[in-house]
Image (cartoon, rainbow, N blue to C red; front, side, top):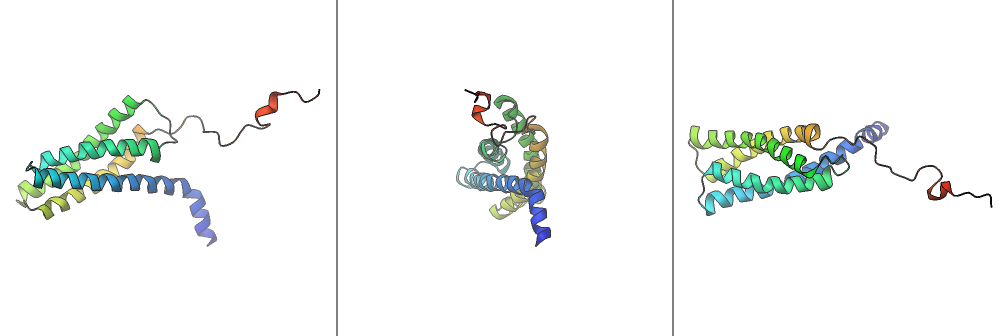
Length: 164
């Protein structure tokens, strides 16, 4: 048990970060899949158009969740910069989904909803690996100065003279 405690102590921040990232990702996945099916089945949009619409909306949700919860302790390098990079990297990750859906639909000639959803899951899985790595590397940067956990030595009144 001591080994498990030491491992947890060593990787606790990574475990918590991955849990938050996974939670946001799970909600974004449900949103993405629901919108993909809604656009494709209910609205009759093509599978690739449906994927682009679903990903655009779920990506906006994911950005907000990751910025203000998963990576909130990381340096904020500007909303415009982060949002641009986040969408650029999600655009690259979208290619994984587009390729798997396009291959399934147009190469394998499978047009049913189950095949669409399986292709989507594979594409999202590949894209998620890319996104986690790229967000940490380029979007949500490590803080350059550590965030203070407590007051400096001496507390608030350290500068007040006590020799009266």
